[in-house]
Amino acid sequence: MDTVLRNPVDGTRLRILAWLKEPGIAEHGATADAVATRFALPRPVARTHLRLLTAVGLLRADRGPGGPCYRRDEVRIAEVARKFEKGW
Image (cartoon, rainbow, N blue to C red; front, side, top):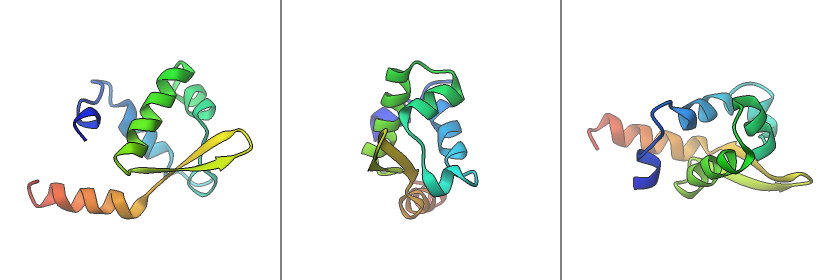
């Protein structure tokens, strides 16, 4: 969790999470290539963000024809939000 909390100053991971909630993306998820394109990131940087978000449970990665497809884990996100609301 420490690694995720050391989030880049520009909030890239939060923007990725918000984008993955948009209609269409939420249902189908997104590959690292799609994230890299959407946020103008090098593919390795996009993959790093996605792996970190997956490692802490905020995203799920399902195998797809173009590689892993990432989706938000709404249950885990709600759990984390509740902890922060309680002053975690």
